[in-house]
Image (cartoon, rainbow, N blue to C red):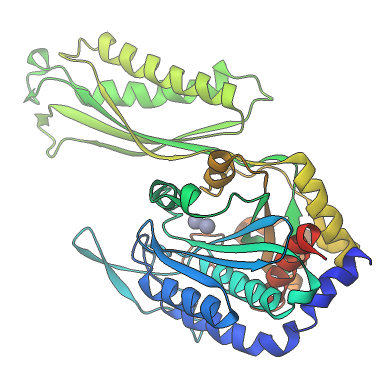
Length: 419
Ligand SMILES: [Zn+2]
Ligand SMILES: [Zn+2]
């Protein structure tokens, strides 16, 4: 049987399911939940899996959900979706836009599915439902997993810390997908690193406060921090080869309260993206060296404190598994719907599952931009104007994005499971 036929045996039921999936998507979109608060979304996922015939475990790493469907001898395949939304006030103007506010550390914040995880949940509900419906088309164990808190980098790890690897069968492969700016329904992936490592730090630099009119009595942390920020920018420009990509962004620099008070300390928050472990180590070592040296250059009374914040590992696509998935995509989708992508400086905690379980994993992107809008923007060089993930106007078109993600997940799954 051809790869295309193997996928079609399952996808034949997609048409009738689509209206229901669309309303599930709109419902989840208009009820977004912040990281580690995904109770309603997890409830929907669990209910859908249960009614499709999966053994369902809930509450893994707080709100994570895992379904297991054993369907004879064959490989074990894990399919992953993330569920959380972001503290962003939605400005899409869509009829199903979010008006939700929610508590974040004691503060009420607007919440929006600005990264498309509502789409990911809907895709996985669709794929899991269809595969459960067509049990004679495949053999093996299917394990859809809905994770909390991708946006804080804590969700995959929370599920792992809650015994994921001990409580569930080790997958022979792990698949995941993300909606992005790109022509709707176009699949993009690559072998090797596909999303960057992300490392964030808070750096506290110490000085000595004094009256603004008497700088001779101060050790000015504002100068110390300012010099540090500038010098940090030389890591990428002067210490790395032009072919070694990295990003060092200082996103926050805070010191002082008043123009005539030299403060006691300054706080820098910075974010690093790298695509290679060796480059990552060099950049992180350079940050530490520069921060300490600048403090010393200023006669700081004590060493700066460097505190790691979020951390994301690389998502590295296993070459063999990726080849298998790409071949399946190419057999099913028209030629112009499957593309090789560059690695992106986005980061993801999807990689934690494959790395921790030592299972090969494949991650791919699905375009969510109206194809005509995208083609026009490409022609006029204005792709940067299309609202990206995390933008308050990020609004994937439902069709064909919704069906494309379900199809891609089923097509790739069948590359392992087809009977
Ligand atoms: Zn995101
Ligand atoms: Zn995301």
